[in-house]
Length: 274
Image (cartoon, rainbow, N blue to C red; front, top):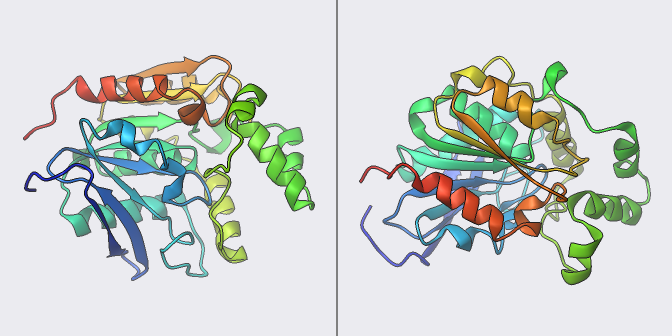
């Protein structure tokens, strides 16, 4: 791609294998692409205020998962392997043969499938606050599940905020927060995202990942317990880890800029082919 202003923003739609239109947001051209994958039931706004941390070395590419944002919202089963196919469809649409990939939460689950199924497409991989899924994973406890399943929507939302961020950070950053779910999602899409994340199980394919991998996590994450870090690291070749002490699920915001510096340094270790 021709070099141009890194702040250039291009939005558009790609078509998935099943015909679903997928919205994407491409910031900058002419530099190596970094694909940023958001959490469950969220769209590209998950990365608001963070993606700019990478623009000194990369362009950034986000997307709205099917069922969220400006993407279509079909009423059929969703899955993390299916979301991975959507990521590849966007890359193909933009003519991106190889990219760096950073997925957090459910985005990290999807990133596992992308990197395992398409090793030639991913140069370096970052997995944040995520899990291998399935029977080998360490799941959140029942108290967390009950807090998120409350019928009082405001109480459930407050519980989610508490799982994302520490009280000290919230007092300095009162919101609004962009990581609490995409507005306007139809009920079938919200359920579909929940089922896709809950049914994720990439244990058997993790050894197929060939990209050097960095695994990041907050030590006090109860939404996706940090006990999943050594599980992922034991299955992924060339994996290294970093734990942010005192952080919860939203380490990437609460520990900014340290988290961005660690990711950027990892991505810079191997020059991206021109």
